[in-house]
Length: 162
Image (tube, rainbow, N blue to C red; front, side, top):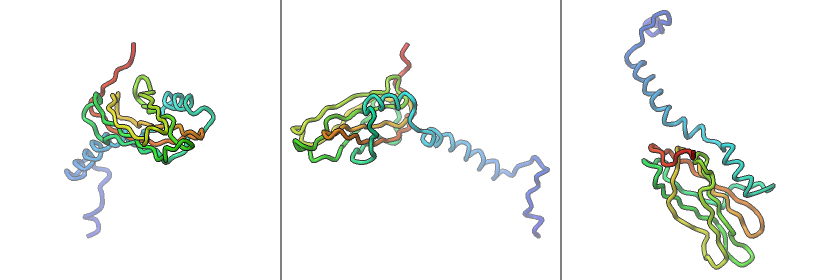
């Protein structure tokens, strides 16, 4: 009875179920590879290094929200919120948005003062491809905090500059 379940490795014939499941895994893996392969690109690392200098940004306090899947990179809603009391002695000075795949990694910079009330903003940006977007917050005490969000763009918006 055990021989009926033995896999015949000498035969090149695959069962229909094995063939279809293999195709399914290969098809789905193409959707997961861009998100799993995302790490800081050299251009993004250089842009962040120019902002923070010798400081090392810490994780936390910065919440960046981008839809995980967008149909077109032409108009992507981006929301940033930084935890801060926004007092005269403790406030957010600036937030820098860095893109890993756009031709120019610095998407924009927003400046705050204690009179801003809250360190939050919502805007729309263009994204060239599926990528990780970083938000680097510069605090009044000289510290830097970071947060990021990954997004999968099905139709790119930005093109290489000539």
